[in-house]
Image 1: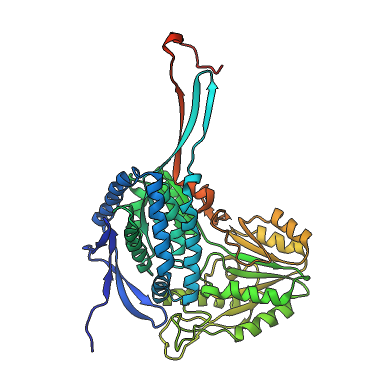
Image 2 (image 1 turned 90 degrees about the horizontal axis):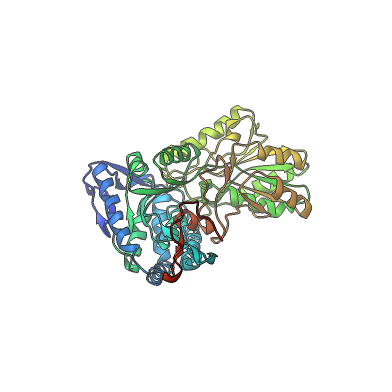
Length: 506
């Protein structure tokens, strides 16, 4: 029997793998087997300081690069990522558990932002007003912030960081990425890719760690901004703490996304999309559909169609076996699996009907894996915590409503405002929905309305803290600051002389 200790996943500082000396680690599991496959370093204060100092040195170099040279590096990163994305997908599957094709999809959506960033010169242009006043020109410059921090969640270890760092780097900043300690290896792979693309050392730093590392970024006077995706309580903490320390903040929080289904909708389409949006990535995504609001009389038929589709889903190791990839993999940890199960317990205790029960699922050959089956709940009370709180697992609830207005009011009364969808063939109803619903991202016959990269991602209410959404124009505005310059080159023959009055335009 081998007594070899699992490897330790370290930091990336000064353009190289940087082993930790903190003595603190956390386990990294293979969610499909339940086995510890590695440990990840948890930074101490000295390592936090070293990472930030390295980023500051990298920024001093990177900010001097011309737009053309920065663009060349970003194009090179894009080409390397596109050629080797399968490697990254397999790393994600091994630590997160999602199926490889889903991990590939995550990478491709992140790559869209990289591709947006290749066109950054157009998005960081200033403006020029000639002769704004007699002999006076006024113009603006957009310049980088400096060192910026990114704190990313476990559910998208590649895509979510890519919502931020391509834009930040293109704009001339240096990035310190603090990935989730649950699946930290994707960040290191991306760091190595940046090095191969020609990015100067220090411009992309990976700081492994827990709350100590997070707080180190929030309190550092060198770090100028924080970008975060995670639960609402943590997003609020990030926003309040970073703001008090004078930083720009974009903190994207949790969700409870509803799908409103009108009686004229194609119920086969709805059932397909509800299953895709509710159970894809095992429900571990902030844009998952958690609640179907079925406008009667469609609920019974829709529930039957969804149940039929659940029965045909394949659950298993996301890496596949014998060349067959499952539809859904495990959850990230046993603790999270138990938390998801607790919400089903709550719903049942509150009087809901468990139509399909995923609790206690065991997969042959993977009995110790963190599996939880697709779960369908009917008649869930809207007062139940299982309805009001984010579950973040493969649990889809149905609430029966009598009218369009009742469904709209339920969505608008919720704490969150991340994503929502309406399924209907009525253009007037869809137009009214998009106008009146109090949610930041809306799908019309589209269940997961994640915007393309040249638009911006972000919700309303308790789903977003801060004024800037992710990527798109919002992203470039967030990662740059503007200087306005008023310039006059005097003609020695027409010197204006002394005038102590308030400057006037003429």
